[in-house]
Length: 131
Image (cartoon, rainbow, N blue to C red; front, side):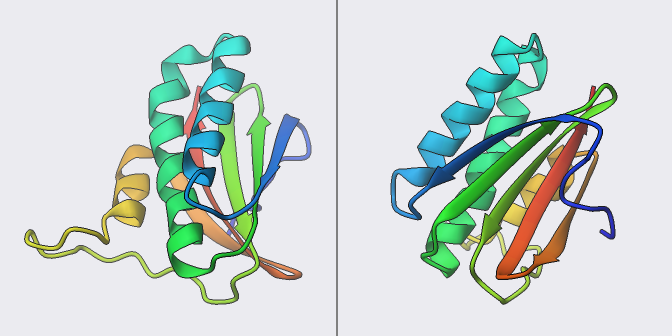
C-alpha cells in the first residue's frame, strides 16, 4: 500500500473527465483502448473492470472530477484514479445480500497490488497488473 501512484520510468497516459454517471464508461474505454493499442490487450478486461470500480467509487462517494493516469512500464501497468475527496477508502467484505460494496474487494482480488496515495488535494487509488 505504500507504493507511489505513478512510476517515473514508465510511459504515462492521462485522462481528465467530470465525475458524472458517464465517467466510469469513459475511463474504462480509455484504459482498454490504450492497452489494446500498446499490444497489451490481454490485460485490458481486468484493467477496465478495476478502473470502472474505482471511478464508480469517485462518483458515488465524492462527486469530484476524475483524473486517471495509466503508467505502462516494462514489467507492469499501474492505473491510478485521483479525486478531490479527502476520505481514504476502506475495503470491506460485504454481506451476500448487499447490492454494493464490492468494488475495492474486486480490485484487490484481481490486481497484483493496489493501494491509496494521498495527494495535495484528495487522493489517488491505484492498482497494478504485472505484464
